[in-house]
Image (cartoon, rainbow, N blue to C red):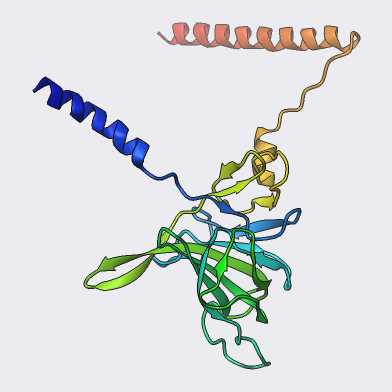
Length: 247
């Protein structure tokens, strides 16, 4: 029985050690380029409300920007004909797209690509960082951007459904992992050390500005501090006397 109890204690450790590491994704644009994430999970405003896209991200980028594979896999499906002429209805909500199947069975979607600028074909193997096509604004799109999301297939009610899964991006050498957030501007860097990206609002929140006081300023600073302390003590004394007089 004692041996059995020891094995039960060890099992979670063994299971954790055997679990595969979470997949990492590089940014789907070229080295040195910087773009802003406009929609991400947890944002105040999002159009990603379906089970299949709730963890997807939108990245604002000019039309014609190279779109790279965020993770290696095999191209499962492509569409490049959307947006071929003025006044034509979108062939799909996603416009032109590339779907890449990863080794764990998950599927990455790169959507709203430019007309006739998809450069891969179904069945083609792609490495992380490999060129898939060029960004555009095809399909139901309010402006030039890349829609990127990862999903897995699950069984529900006797049918197969696509379920969105969270994505963690990496930058830098050694790689730093971060979750996508709305308003985050990120530079693709895979050749040198990097810092975790922060949105402008986050930088203002956590920035600390320090300044060494000169010998002339120091006495005035101490005087100001003393006055603040004296005012606080006087206020507390007044409150104490006021409360005692009421009682």
